[in-house]
Amino acid sequence: MRGKIVVGGSLVTLDAIRKADQVGVAGIVAGGLIDKDLVEFLGYDIGVAITGQEDINLSIIMTEGFGQIRMADKTFDMLKSLDGEIASINGATQIRAGVMRPEVIVALSEKKERHENKIEGGMDIGTLIRIIREPYFGKLATVAKLPAELQQVESGTKARVLVAKLESGELVTVPRANVELIEG
Image 1 (cartoon, helix red, strand yellow):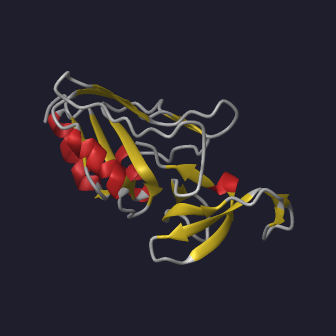
Image 2: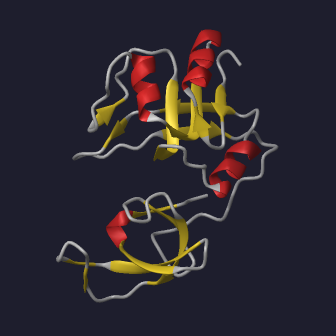
């Protein structure tokens, strides 16, 4: 696995990170990571605003975030379909002004069929999303309704919301700012 990017569908453990580092893996893409494992591997706690400057030999991307969170099936299936392709990853993250998200870039061979089902523009009814704030943090859902009017949310402020249909079938209302699109 030297020089390769390894994809795992759920939790990447401290032992797995250490083994990957030992054999020279270029990067790991997984659903989640326990934060204390990352701190132990690095030898220090990372800041929350900017990552990517750590003095380590591999990049780690968590598609879902900290904790034991399963990678979205659609994301895992897409990454699995790219097995053997030339790829590059950048795990740098910045959550303040000038937001940067981790990236996985794949140069598709001519043999691979290019995925034409891209989301153009934004959300619509049926769009696959992930909720990124409590109380539904990490849940996958589809957009069921997009009310045009502002609605009062738990904090007391008014915001644009959407009604999301969780995988369980439950309908929940969440601020639009608290979701991210699942593309691909």
